[in-house]
Image (cartoon, rainbow, N blue to C red; front, side):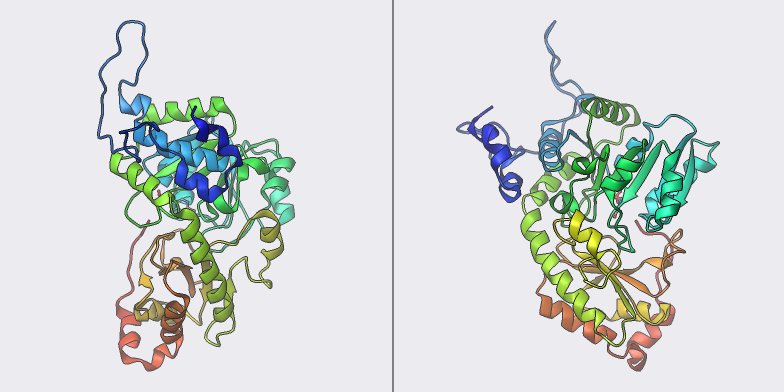
Length: 396
Ligand SMILES: *Cc1c(COP(=O)(O)O)cnc(C)c1O
């Protein structure tokens, strides 16, 4: 423990992002934990313990990232090869036949994993609920073993009261905190048992890696998660862990800029004649605004909006120039996607576009979106592409 370790609890989150997950604070040591491309380490002498094999014992690079994410969420963190690897590790802790309640609106991969498990001889029993429906929710959580929450949800930006669910249910509660990031919401402090992140998104922040993390409330759950990583093998890559930590250093400044822009774009889109609905919990008229304002420290940098029909939505994706038409979210570059084109997203309105706001200048983004929304049908280029260039298949 050096002097900084003793101060950490009193430091602001921006400072902790910059300061934690460093190596030894000694002269001659590098400021960053170097990439450690190691499967195995020299064995200890008799009676000593030391790191021996990375899948079992981790690496200095994973430790550094886990120290930072764990600090931000307030519990011990375990990193995995992807967000889905992290989600799967939590679900694997359940006994066979466990009753799992999951939101109707959630990341496609979670839905797929849960449905596969339910179909495969009842690895678990799945019940999906409309989390906005209090009665449906209360009935479902009453006899659940695990309640999975995703708030705000992907892509409908639905917000669930984490503390209320945790208090009302004797079940384990896991929260996918990818959209909020640890900066805007800390589910463990609200009574959740597990927090999951796709660090591929905001924590990494640069669309150049896949990585996931679980943060557990109880130290013994960390041991069980380490065991899952050890035996199932969803280990982070050395480069990915390095890049995720490097990206996390700037999370606060990236998110502050992106969130401010998202709020502005949400308001302007809501006033645009070609847009029928905007979903963003930061809008005062949003059905989730009050709860989000109470539960979160900010409304995030993802929003969804609806246009007239799917063809128009596809035309907007084709017409944008500054915004990138691509799946995924949380990067420094803004991305847009029509989510209903993905399998398993039938509940999503066909003309809904999910926009992940990056760090570009707000006026450049607005000019781009306004031009793309202008009159797509009148533009011969976007009109033809709306019909022929719709990407098919499943994207992560
Ligand atoms: C992307 C995403 C995931 C999956 O993360 P990967 O790193 O792609 O495996 C899980 N949850 C949410 C909310 C996501 O957006």
